[in-house]
Length: 624
Image (cartoon, rainbow, N blue to C red; front, top):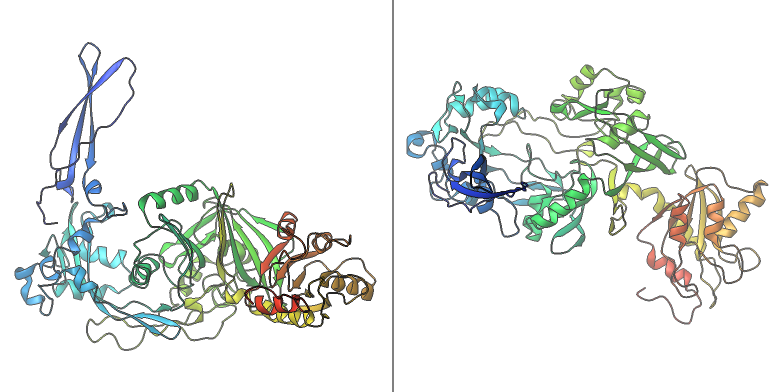
């Protein structure tokens, strides 16, 4: 939209309820000094009494730009986006008045057309974006007023050194209101700043974005770790919203935010209405959230609640710590399993502070094992920041080197390759170039696993991430081997089970292993009791069974779910849900949940589990 173009605003009437009075509104339009002044109107509401005498005038400013410029799905379109489709970078940067500094910049293509030439390249585990030219456009913010353009760039955009911005300004790549800027140019209210840059986006994970659910208004995805949600900082195309546009043709707006390194459920509005509805539920805390984390050490048993306040102590380094002056924050934790070195933990954040789960786990002394921010002994020392240990100033000093002069480290990956600044800059723009990211730069063992409405009107969950499954696949494979020991039968299923404590198998069982119509879980438990002369398994025991434990026994025996609930078992991993061949509507999952026993499926074993279950049946399982 060219400056000065006229847009006729829709009449805007504000409603008010005034006792014993009637309202008469008159409209007047006038331009203001704001950057979008052409779209701004002022509404005068003349309120009159019943006798007709004026009782006052209420003036309300209204920006018609936001009524007029919306896309087909109702999302607001920024003026800079409209301009990018209307003007070339050549024109935006001063055109003929700056011709000597704009060599090679096309005048016959819009900024949008030029930007759209950027291409993705899938390179093994990495998604790359080829370097491209981009013209930033932004209006002066309140805190920028009456400051020099160089001061603003150097202090607000610290991704690059001051020398880079000085060079760009002096070479005519920065304009204010399409006029060439110099390092001493003062920025005023309403000024439009444009900056031409050669962009080098960091690579991100090439794992595909999985769609969990979608309708006309909303799409729910499983976001891979290491991908930012929306354009920010060094990232533009390598973001969830831009990848969704490129690969699915969807223009979406995020309803919830996940850190770049966090994976899992994200809600994206396909329409403004859909986004607004979901954001409202999130804001009003009408959503129950469950995350999975793999943490350092043996996490304590039982329900653990942390309600320590959290404060951002270094915005530039995204460092957050427990601090009495911080914002209230509450997280509930429950151990799922322990493998002798790390624990898989279920996390339920009741508030939504930045890095809340990560900070609260560190406070407990069990940070996420591969967290470069909160688990590195190099940064936090031997106790890894437990109970708030560590001098913030020294911590920031070390974190500032990560990804620049030193590779980021974590408890899980203390010595590894990763992102650092290379010796040679870009030959085109002289920008610093970086090596490829490593394990601590792309992945975090924190996953948004399940979101559910408080009234349970909807519920979504993802598959378990690979890092949460590695150990459990080994045990489920052993459970399948137990199931294959079952003899053929036409009247029951063949199931295998393991009992595991601290990563070690303490008992095994399979259907009908013991005399009578015994089930696999029953056999594993009774064998342990008999061997050790006890009537329960150790606290923290985990059950692996190829099929969902039964909730009803036709023979009159105690159902396996009830046996599990009565024991010290904290988690049940299953290979497949029980078919309704013999018992309809198995409610084992519900019973386990009501007893606060974790219930998770290990995917990838469905075919093997069902083949073993139906051994000897005249008709095997469907779709095997």
